[in-house]
Length: 307
Ligand SMILES: [Zn+2]
Image: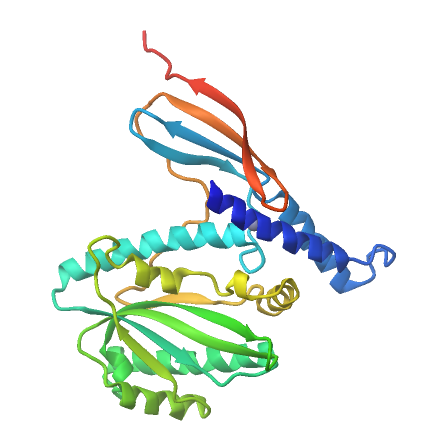
């Protein structure tokens, strides 16, 4: 509940910023003002109320209802929920693949291009470079053409991330990849390949992922699944700029043996199959210096007894 409160708090600040970008005198003539109005209205409704079911007999709490705005690049609520959902799917697939094929080596790879002031131009450069790398990967896998170190990947998923440096006023675009390797990658050689493609960056970082007793692989997976924009590091203004630039663009994906993992769209949880008694708990968001969700109504629901 605390986490939801923090996410919605930031969403609320973003919404307030957007209202300042709306020109109410423009009467719908100003395109940017219209976009701000639309986004702010959606944000306002997102997660205003949350309804949970507390299945006390099995000690599980499920999210039953939640009105989402679906603006993942703008709304920390929606981004957070999506990140949690994709994490679960990818972790399942990783475990499945590692069971089937012993000896796969999990690693985190980061690919970077040079920083720049123009986010859109940098976005295009990063994604087209990465697409080239992926098509070389597929050429090798399908036709045995042109081996490079990247082809040692059995399967992987990735996210593009953009951070912003306030001092230099530059965006820093990079791609995080969680990969399962058939063989260890020669980092220097991969850096050469990457520079051949980007012409401006040798920066390739590869780190082994160790399984921990407590978290398994989930920490490393979380690093890739987290949102494209780290909201806490970005000003409200930059978040808005990035949203306008990146909206509708493809920022995540998977390939090789990890290809085809589907991330469900719905934000709510699956309910237990059997009918169990639960407490329905209705929360309302309260905006304050320290925002929180207030439990407004609790309803005791018992399963219908069969005749
Ligand atoms: Zn939202």
